[in-house]
Length: 208
Image 1: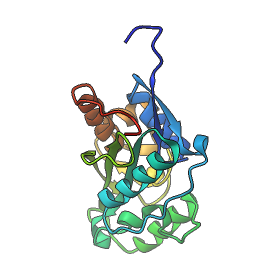
Image 2: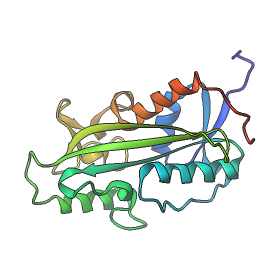
Image 3: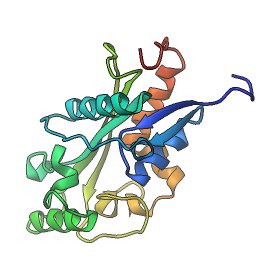
């Protein structure tokens, strides 16, 4: 690519500013745009798995924008809760729940769970579609091990970051810098895998 060549535009099937920053920081050779730029209507996440929900969102964004699309479906899996909140992480406290609502619901559910039994992990399944009818999507995933703290701590990140305890660091995810989080996180792992694959995989015509 020469300096005169424009970056390939990819729509991110999300309007989450935190996700947009994280993906763009790791996919430097592309221009990542939120789906709101193209007035993409929200896609209902009706599937029972992360990969199926990611595919639904990516196809929806690609079809409505005419661009290649990236979608992730990420969530928190808590062992003491049998893997909950899982695919319902963003709406654990209800359909219109805020991050604060979800964190409060999680801490309430774990109120009687002792230290040593609060293990959890973030997972991210990331899907890339060259166009809405892409028969061979790229699918990657990452996982990040941690535990759930008793109280929120830190001011960075989003979602459950303020209660995701990293024993090796002695802090929550929300206390990491953006660069530290990208180096460790489930989404950072998945986006780096995608970046490596995009550098080697043939690109079908966008919108084909």
